[in-house]
Length: 455
Image (cartoon, rainbow, N blue to C red; front, side):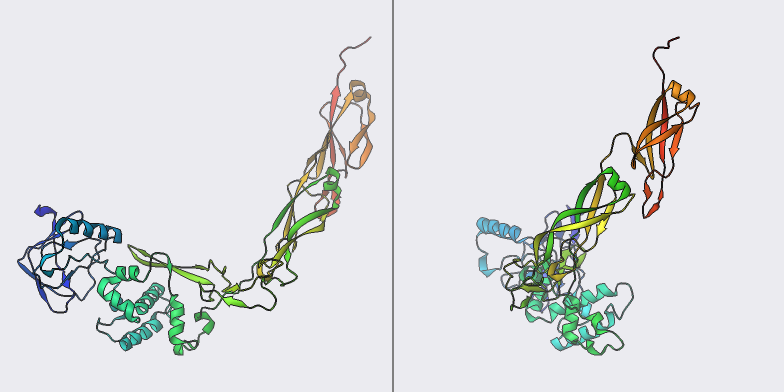
């Protein structure tokens, strides 16, 4: 169907000399590509305009002496390629006349490394090195503050890393970026060179003449993080009176302390730390993923050394290389007067010791309070109910009531009605951090009526 065909405009061979391709078909997975003219001259294109993810192979060939064809599209998976050729060989057998099998297509690079560095494909190593030196200085993020400078710097570094290596360059020239990815084991998510490390290795620690800038800004050094230890939570239940007037409680705590043998290093006495082989002592790794939109890089903490850049070569026997040992300890916690239910007290430095000699975490004591019958708390005030008979309500009386200070007398004035509130001033809860200021104890009067009245 001519409506579902597409014109092939760029086809080339691996040979440097131009060749002619007779009219024929290029079969695609979901469409057919028609060559309309009888003969189409083709040679290696100068630009990387082929970026369509299309799988193609040639079914008609110029002749037995024609060079193998190569199209720059997305490559099929190795499993698909292997399955296809096994099927073709079983059906047709070997190619007659020494004709080479059709060449599968290779993925087009999302970025032409030669164009990124601004050099031709025939550029020498010296020219590539000179171009990288010039562009790296121009687009380094600490020199160029324009948007996109960082991404441009990464592209330049990726291009130089490939083109400066003869083996990688040969694979890239023949198969493009996808061939390089599969041949060098560069699967998505693999660790690759940090562009800033490449910059430092190229220019050296003097930064190649970058004047007026702090060298530490450019260099990627081994991280020496000082990590604080984990915090500990301890639940403590107080008596009602302890929450009102304060107390000092002793608790038994199990936490991590610094190992006395290795002083928190985790290594055996006399042994030395060795540089992490995963990150090379930097404490960080860069993961580069191949996506339809290009290469995306992400820097994260090294999973092997945890960001320290060093690994213990010979572990301490007491702490097994952890630098900490678990011990039990008795700690006295001071409860301030007027503390409320649900409050949390922080005891600094009583948590777990930090890794590799880091500072300890904190102890957080979460408080709960036992309730007592007859007294309820409302902020700094206390609430209670007192019951009296009708005669006492009419004539007045004095009754004993329970308070946090003990039993005391409460005066009932004559004519008291049910629901009236009587106050014992300064018999409530001390204000937190101001124990001299106390709330009140409020008593709600309940008048009980007799069931029978005698005359």
